[in-house]
Figure 1: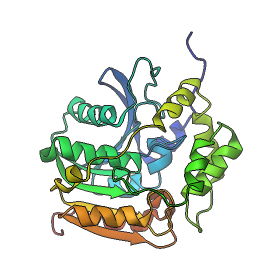
Figure 2: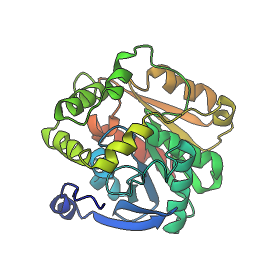
Figure 3: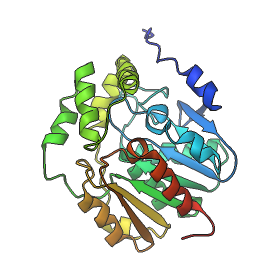
Figure 4: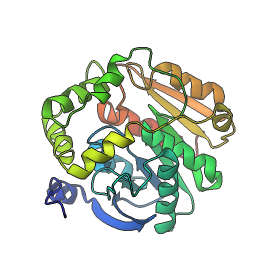
Length: 286
């Protein structure tokens, strides 16, 4: 049976920014992505929380990045407006996400790119750099999964596990992800909630949140791609020990930690985040 669900309409917001909404078949999946700007290619990879997608996670940064880059932000399998096959038909594993991202780059004819990945998107970006290092010019890991350093406080992960598709559960989730100064945007709250009313999205997230997101430390240490590791000082998901862990393991890495910021630097502190990452991607620096 075909679902009657329709995702929230953001066409007016996209048009106001000059952002194109596009689709491409990737690894057998109808894949949605946003695109804006011209210049060196910058791919933005969103995280894996309920309601995550390219627009909700990156909208605060798109126009600023587009002044210097051709910005491409895909919805990953199981998220946003990209296909959400039944788990019996698709393997929602980290290796599948890595394969999908490489196939996405192939489908768009992108031979080399800059990558920014947040949380689960960081694990995917890192996986691409591991698999085909010549295709990643520079890499930004922001609140990134991939390194096996646990959160010492289980409360926050229990919030993720307890998400039940209600508005209040989404509010608790967003409060957990933001730092102490983060004020929830009610429009974003309802947007993420609306995305999670799709039955296929609910099934997919229940599988995705059980994904194994950890690489062997030796594989991380073998990455030579110039990498900027960004952390929020108040991130209770990707705790600072993980940020420092990446810096210790990756010899070509720099670090930047934002005060009063949690897991969503691109949403909580977009001006600073765009400025620092754009400088990192510059040919004149780093």
